[in-house]
Structures are given as C-alpha cells and as structure tokens.
Length: 125
Image 1 (cartoon, rainbow, N blue to C red):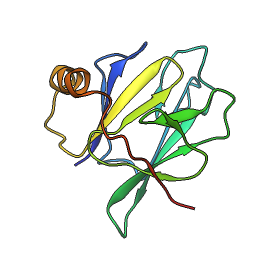
Image 2: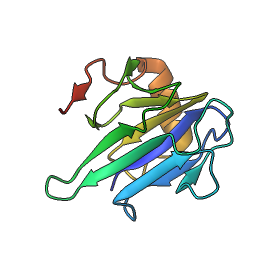
Image 3: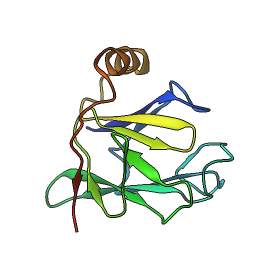
C-alpha cells in the first residue's frame, strides 16, 4: 500500500502509511492525522485523499497562504499522485511511494540522486 516518507523538514525520516486513511490531514494542529510542527504550515494545510474506486491518491491544498507543491508546481486543485512524486508544504518535503516496504533512508537517497521525482504534475479539474 502507499505511504508518504518525509525526506526533509521537521518530521524528517518519518513514514506515514496510507493504508488506514481515506483522508489524511497534514498540518500544525494537534487534530491533524499527521502533525508537523512548522510555522510555515497552516493548522490544516494539506490533505491526501484516496479515490477508492480508482485506488489512487490525490493531494489537496486547503487554500493555504504558503501553498502545496507537487514536483515544484504549486497545486490549486486535486492533484493525482504518482510513485516518486515530491510534495512540499512549508519546510517539509514528502515523497509519495506506492511501495509500503520502502524505508525513509532508501527513499531519501533515491530522491536526492534522481531529483525530486517526476517533473509532470497532473491536475484534475
């Protein structure tokens, strides 16, 4: 199953399994599914949503001041995530992987060696 691995920022090397989440909220607030203490993040900054019919994950920005970037492109609509995509919010960068067995160190090394994942970002309107 898919996961997010934090490769940079305050929560570096943490892994967030997505198997148990249809909706995963990321932000500063204690009520977030995954809390990151970062002054550049909103209390509710980013959501990762599973489309159960397609089995695909989407990133959603909660109309935040500092934005959410997928492969260095600021998103403004639900954005399809693909294996290796880099998601940046505040000072944190997370890599989306469809291989739940990957460890943070392995993903970070691959991410740095080949750049920040894919260059194309698909935005669903």
